[in-house]
Structure formats: structure tokens, C-alpha cells
Image (tube, rainbow over all chains, first blue to last red; front, side, top):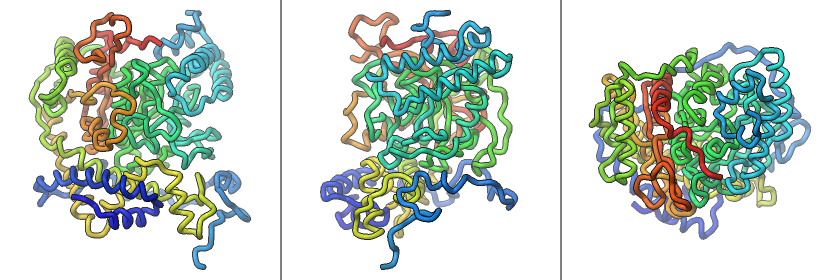
Length: 95
Length: 504
């Protein structure tokens, strides 16, 4: 199957990845080829097969809800591009 | 043993024995490894960061511990860490521009364990960006060269770790394996690579890629070293909710030297008919050798859904990656584009410039597979096929303790050869992906060489003719890493492939 240019732009938008014009053409070709190979799965009858999302039979691993020491704020913010008053600084969401 | 130029050739357990006998100091060993890195890493490119000063400090601490008669088998032994595991205060890039300047404020569980055991961390190894790739060509910084043939890839994504161990730039290394990223480079570089059972080793502090597939494991010069590394890193960690709440055994107890009573099945789909005869010959010779050691070996074990594993994996892993990599938003850490037209524009440009093509490709694949209208046809279908693949392994392990096959369809390929064809690159993991899908343990064991021109290589290669290592893959039941190590160790007692080192 082949993806249209609009579909590639739609996926990129959902993934929040900016694309150049060259990128659009390149990903259109590569993604289409890879999706073609995925069609092979449709040959398998999986009507009564339950899905496996996880290889271990672990369910809802819980721990006691107890306060524990965490990293100092300065260390947590040390890698942030922009900070202000012990917080991450972001551009305005609503303008 | 005093000749510094030969120290780097030792295995980790040989180095540990010399340290225990006080015939060498950790400072001498560490300096020998740092000298080796200085001498050859310009040609190999195994390391993204060399932590020389820190390593020598850790070595001095280890020497003090050893002088007090304390420490364990890895105390004072120089080890390398793949650059997707956090080490406090040491730049951790994950092979990406996105994390080029990221300095983690905490240690990964495995790093913490290695440091407690007294191991010396010599540096962080090169890798495909976010562990997505099979050749290290997708590193944002530079490629890594195969120590056996410098114009070839080391495999990936843990290719820096595999090359470092093969070239004597570390006595052992940690890698991570989401679809073959420990085993395939181990095969291509001629070292032992173990992907433990999903959940066996804590992933706390490992940069997430495919959360139902990722697992950390060792790359080493032999099976004993892999057992020693597993003794340090395996076991439950409450900080990783997917870590199995099981105690880990002493893996060195599995190294008994014979294979009486071990039932081995050769998996047909992992030794296909159209293989290069030289590569096929290596599997046949290994099977024969294992039989000679007391195992029963049966050919013709079929796992018919194997051919669907590639499509299954390339839906599941990118889907999980698309969710995991949503965190790279230029706000909390990492590269940030600041000059755009508002928040959304900054976000899109951060990800446009911070991620390389392969990462973008996989995020987009996963986004598509999870998107409205396609979820059932792709993601849900793949999860059902995952069940079929897992059931086939379960059925096979009712009759066999260990399954034998190849790790990779070909030996190391030339740098650039598959770079423009993503699907061709994906095919190099065709034998390793099913193991991650099923969550079982797998090990790559050096089992022979082929000449670069094709055909079997003699023990003494003619000058200029390069020979490339080939590994066989051993697979076992969940949490039975011990059987893999037992088989690998017994094989090593009868053969000398694991003692071969590249001429550098």
C-alpha cells in the first residue's frame, strides 16, 4: 500500500515532528515500502487468539503510598533548557 | 604477567584472578585499557565518552578494597557501558543530538550494581540513535568500525560495546537488546552476547525504547565473564515495575563443562535453506560439537510463525517507541529549538532537528499503527501474532532445553551497504526479533569465521584476507539463562573460537 503525501503530513503532525519537503518524499517512499511488508500478517488467522501486550504475567505492580526522598530541585532542573523560580519554563500554550 | 601491552587481551575473569592474587593492580589494568583506547579507538570509534579520570579514581578505590581482602570477581575490572544507560554526572547521549549534552542526575540500576561490585567504568559506548538500528551507522556522532574488518559495521545497536570488547578496549561491556541489539553485534564482532529474559535485569535508568521488549545484558569475551556480569546485574529492583520479583541464581554454578542430559533442538527457520554454505557449515559443526559434549541434538524443529516476527516486531517496537519518545519536547531536558513561532512550532522543530531519520521513521510508523482506524489492523493484529510466536516457543521448550540457530543471516556487512534501504537493514535482525517478542533469553556464541570473499576461513588467514566472525544463537525457557551459559561454556572448553582476537 502506498501512503499519500497528506497521510505522511498527518502522521508527522500527530507525532509532532516537523518535516522538510525532501523529508516528506523520503518518508512517503520508505513508510509505504515498510507498510507493504506488514500486509503479510493478514495471512494469519488470529480470530481466537488473545493479544499479548507484555511477556511477563505481572499485573498492577503496587508499592505503599509513602513519601520518599527525591532528587534536589536544582539537580532535576540542571538539564532544562529554560527555568524560572524552581520550575520548567515553557512558551505560552494559550495566546 | 607484567607486560602492559598484553593485559588488554585478558578476559575479565583472568584479569580478576590477577587482581585477587595481587599480581596486577586495578590502576595498571585501567591504565592499560585507557592506553589501548588511546592507541586504537581513533580507528574503531567504539566510545562516545571516555571517563579516564573517573576510571582511575574508581581503580584506586578498588585497589584499596582489594588490599583489605575485600571485593568480588569484578572488583577493579574495567568495563564499558552503552550510552543509553545513565551514569550520574557522565554525559549520556543515547547516540542522539537530542541528548548530546544530557548529564543524568542518577545512576541506572545496573551502573549502581557494577559500582557496588567495584567494577571500573571506563566509558560510554557508541550506538545507533535511541538503539534503533543494526549497524551503529545511525549514531548521530560517528560510525563504529568492526575490529575484524575496519570497512565493515560492528552490528548494532550495541555495536560500540561489542567492538570495545572485541578490540580489547574493555574487559566486558553492557548492552541493551530490544530486537537483537546485544546478540547481533556480538555475532558480528566475535564476542559472547547475552540477552536475558525480559524482566531479569532492571531497566531503571535505561533510556526507554520498546518497553515490553527492552532488556539489558552483557557482552563479554567468554561465557564465564557473562556469568560474572549476570551475577552482578540480575535480580529484582522495585524501581522497575516490570522487573521480575525473582531471586537470581549464582550463574557460575551453571558452568559445569559437560552437556549430559541437555536436549538441544536445531530450529529450522533459523538455519534456512538459502544460507551461504560456509555459514551453514558453522551451525552444523557447532551442533556436532555439542553432541560430542553429551547433549542430544535433533534437527528439524519448526517454529512456523518465525517469518511473521519481522512485521510483528516492526509494528510493536515503533508503537512503543512513539509513546516513549513523546517525552522529548525540549522542555525538561535535551535539545530545544527556541526561535519558532510559538510552543507547537518549537516542539515540532525540536523533534525535527533533534532526531535523526531512523528515529523519525520509527516514531511515524508507530504513530500510524496506533492511530484511529489502523489500530486493529496493525497494532492489535501484531499483539495476537505475538501470542502465536510465544506459544510456538513454549511448545518447543516442552521437548528441548535449548534451541540452536543463527544470530544473523550474514556476517558483518560493509559500512554504507544497507543505509539507504531501511527494510534491508531490518532483515539483519530476522533471527533475533522473535526472542524479544517472546521475552525469552538468547545468547550469541562465537562459533567460527568466514572469509570476506565467502567460503570457510582457515585458522591462519593469508595476509590481507580478512575473516569475519559468525555466532550461533542459543535460546532457552524464560529465566533459564543458566542453560545458555552451561551450553556456551561447555562449547568453549572444546573449541577455541572465543579465544580469537582481531589483529589491530
